[in-house]
Length: 126
Image 1 (cartoon, rainbow, N blue to C red):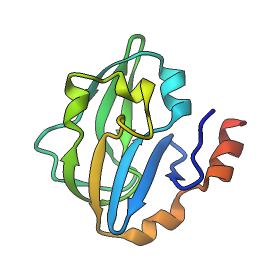
Image 2 (cartoon, helix red, strand yellow):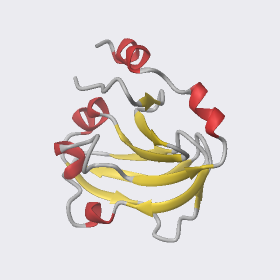
Image 3 (cartoon, rainbow, N blue to C red):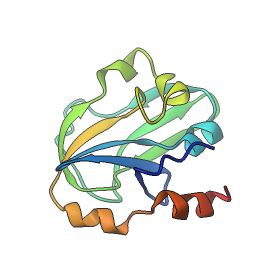
Image 4 (spheres, rainbow, N blue to C red):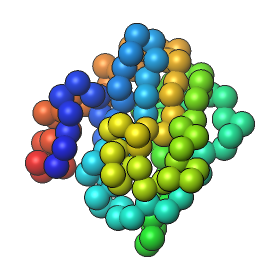
């Protein structure tokens, strides 16, 4: 299971890549493998803010639909436009082309509540 060391993780299987005050958010390799083939990602195009631990959209796989929960709070500055036509990027490249939203963090200290790669690996039994 791929769990990059430079990322932070939520207990709900979202990852965060931090670049300054900007956080890229997606779902982990573990989560996409548990969901199976991703067929649709639903994030409201009008979404302007997210709140830590609150739903910001859903992800639909062949057999199930799951809520996407924000691992940090902030202003949404971009929703990955490629996922509209290519939701399988989440399966193929969850930590790269499969990012879901980009957020300008309003409370960067919330990163302290997230898991390190080692802690996340322990959570998923990896």
